[in-house]
Image 1 (tube, rainbow, N blue to C red):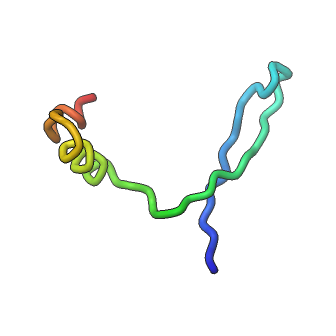
Image 2 (cartoon, rainbow, N blue to C red):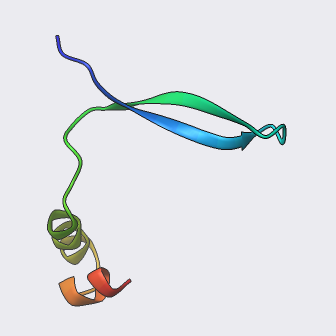
Length: 54
């Protein structure tokens, strides 16, 4: 089984000025801007152009 993940960082963790890393699991591939705009358009009253502008 393949596990997809991305490594993120938190700057100034705990106010000590250090950078901490964490792993975020990805269950599916990330959406493109066009896919996200289309999904928003289908779920609410915003148009594709409105969601891209926002």
